[in-house]
Length: 435
Image (cartoon, helix red, strand yellow):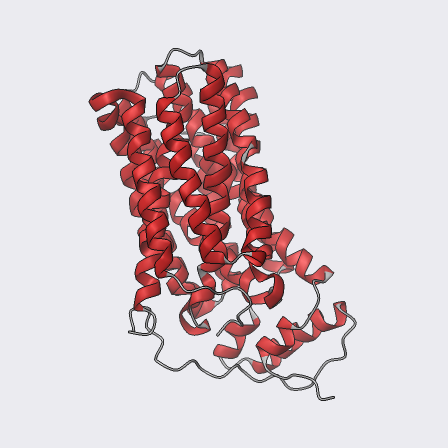
């Protein structure tokens, strides 16, 4: 029996090996460090409000300026990933945002902190879509969605670590928030590990005519699986219909992705950036609000676990829609919550469904584009979504003035419902080969 020779055939027929695990964990650690940085901001805001006597508008700018950087980083990071490689961009962006986070710990004024947070966002925004693209391009077809959701689950680990640090370290001293941000410099060190330890995407190498390098990488994965190398590697056939993300063959899916990314970002970052501060506004002590946020955050992990199963057994699109509807209902529940028990229950449900939706979204996004534009397609969707990340924290003070926390979460529920509707513009990609 002749061995398959195209990149999709040779990678898709492999079992999940130690090389896949190394790639997943290596990318996942970077992902967790990203989540740690983003999640930590919510706790820093609580400390700075008291220490620097900041009002709600100033606090919202601290949250939003990082997302402005993420919008630019995601867009240009995707373009660079299609030009110079997934691994290169991944490593560089880890280094940039690690250094900027460490510098933010030294901030001497609100203006300085805003500058550093913008630089953090540049690196962070570029890294996330590139990492998911890299992992997606290596994962065997039958478990590709599950593997990408597993990558996304590292976000919950990083966010949980941020919650622990925020709960234990930030309120411990006047400089607690500085020490917490200083820990965010770790990605700069980890960037060296990424640059040396992770492989470059085989599909990217082939798209640039670097066949010998691509063959060597595939043979390493085959050796880890105990499979005899199949000889020369040939690219997959180019898909019919052009490669622009707004080409008629891709237009519907691009529109669907942009809408889902926008409204999920709006609700997620609006809610989880402000929950600790909103709890304080509702009369809870700082320590109590941080404790509640930690408990709510822990519900992210089972959300990812359930999504990882459903994306392969039920499909990407239906799983995404289900978790978005669940997010909308949970946000409505939080808006109506009036006791400690109901606040915790609704918050945990929101955490469960929202992060499960993120897992499904990251699984499907790279799969809807051909290799030549996969980086820019994924990056542009993430970049457009980051516009909502900028608007969401800024909108919360306005919504609070309109009708308090209840109005805030009703608006978030509406955004989740729109995202759920837009998910049906996407194709079902379960079991399909990339390209």
